[in-house]
Image (tube, rainbow, N blue to C red):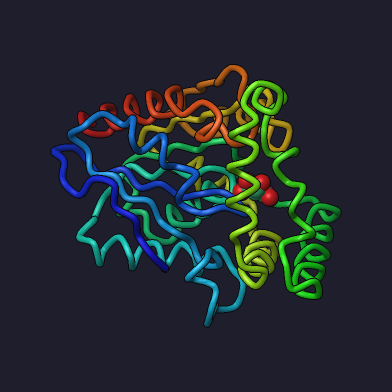
Length: 259
Ligand code: MLT
């Protein structure tokens, strides 16, 4: 698993960015560029991403969380502000459960703490099998339409093209691994409920994958959570409206630094 460091030094707690599916750290590029100077920023390429799709362990987000913890400690990060978008949020909650000392504050972006319903789990397992059988990303090639909000699709065609290009570059074995790992994840609402650090919950108002109601559930669950609804963004708010997401992360970082 690889760690991409946008900025190595900073006074405050480092910011760690965990990406969604079926993408990699590049979905955070614009946000990382807009996080105010003075904070180290590291983005992880989770297991299954290009270059990290060989010798994978049994599919489990717990394995992802343990590998993230190893990579962070290897980079000298002992405590951080952890931001995860969608699948990255599931990994962030697994990290909080298994390595609580690493997590000073949490940004849960376009994500949820609950497990999949049986139909959603079955669909993931079916897609994993299809991708393996096809030996290509064809079964997930149409995902930009579901991931991006209507406003982005109609007014920023270059963003749709960029997300499609990123998906094209993913490894079929990695996509299958991530789907199976997500299918196996438990409900981690209790982990979030027990967290007493600052939390920001960010959601695009056009997110149809983990909609505003899922974000409201996170806010109701976490004892110290704020809700930021990003206008005219879908499920990939960090790509669609990076300035708004960077601002929410900057505020969270300040709250964590002064805690
Ligand atoms: C993601 O963006 O990471 C995915 O939509 C997560 C999921 O499939 O639950």
